[in-house]
Length: 414
Image (cartoon, rainbow, N blue to C red; front, side):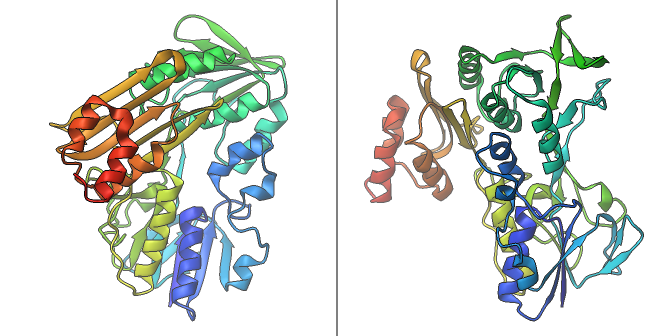
């Protein structure tokens, strides 16, 4: 049996290790399109802020891990998949045949149509190569412009602030982390950043970037412009599915999979940021591009590839973000469900906010700012879909009693 895994991120590496554990005699090929040891993209901000060194981003710290596990690490990029003949055409002209294939190719940064994004000094922050380039240009006192204040952009923001740069954030949406939090929470984050010396321009687009000697001039939709030594682009990501065109493997938002991580093609599975899989909180199939989901996908897909039928119950949409010391989070259907009810409590001066979303007497989603004690509780209630009974009415009046409600409901006191 030859298992081939396209992509050496968390989903791919965990899948390879799981396959080796459950299919000891199989041949396993792990393909990476980058000339780096397999690493975690989510660790890059910690590398930028000097909390870890470059090796700290590696997914396996033992340099001999893949060889010792009998996993072939192949530096190559897939150009096309022929599901009928079970072959992968490589961009360099080679070909690899498989018995079982896992597509774990992840995602890539979106490049908006803005003139000047290809200039020297303009970088995404998605690869180790990007990180090295940013480190060369982001020193104390340097002018830096960050394009995008979504979840990934806000993680990069934290790393840039730690380098003591002069930071301007440009976000075309009406608030920070718009796909994670509502207007109240996003507004709190913006005000917090501004109080800590970061300029945040929401409702603003970068229209053009030009280079003048040793600096970049960043033109804005407001008519104003910013000067920068470095521009970091964090305008979103999109699943890497282009190479599957003509393969017969069904895609939409990402690669469509069933409850066992199988694609529409026989013997082909998908996992991680590229997979359109079940969302536990909504029951719909969507791409949840977060590392815990990728890890879970990789493990379950590998078990099924090895012949151990393992259903995927669904993954929980969850985001936890630290922004210059202020923790924010969102879980599940944080923006509510049709016909549902919500309750919120807020203390703007103290940067405290908690909002709960209900589907009947179950907690369907939650978001919070400046709070940490509710994080595990919210995740537990949403993930287990525990009925709240009378506690729902209590929480509608007093959302801050969430932990109390969880303990009671877990003990059957409803």
